[in-house]
Image: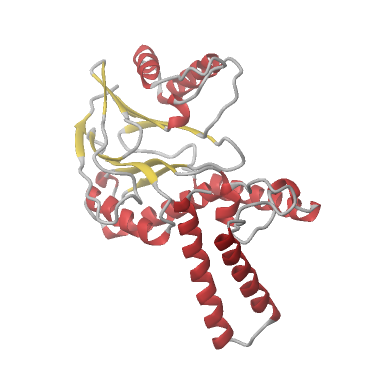
Length: 328
């Protein structure tokens, strides 16, 4: 396990240790609290002697995402008891159901815009983030959030849920877009481990065709305007990188038929059997060629092209796409 991960988990365990000791003083000393305190102390001892994160049965490394969610675990997923495995499966199913409910509804409306999106987790849950929030009144525009958090699996899905709740709460503050992202970044830094970060595109689309967009270290969105395609570079670092990071906003004006194409790296970093990457260049070619299609049809053409490119090679990451086309 990398040193920075050791430091992050150690800090988490020490915090739990202090909290448990406080609870044992404040509350009635229960066997459950005493047992949990001993488990935390044992995990700290394993960190000190270098055996933390090693399965006590097969002596192989325990899955990193599993450790982030269950830092007291002593065996890998493959050596859980049948009852424990069923409990993990139930938790994964519940997590997948909750994450599905956080996605925008398929019939979500954006005044002045046609919208399409595709959300495809690699496993039961995803580390990709996708949300649409309409302002009231509608003239205030529609916010869109699109990103990718570090890691995979349950740990990443927890961070996605955290981002979803955080931005939905912050929107009530009616902050300018860059200040909204700066506030979210500080909260993300304060409430996650030091190794966690999230790339993010945060934007606001007005019915008139005006778009404000902030790209915090995410894959470059593509803009097709007047038949010409270009990308929007980052205007800041990923969330969670620096506490006092500042972010800039780009402004666009799209006319009828123009559109914004957002994607996660599960698209451009897809690989075929020869270990070749799909790449941003191939994506740009596809988007330009199919630019007259409606949003959902354009997304499907992109997915079909990637499937043909992979030629049976397995997927290696979550895949999410969103298209916002200015209505005529």
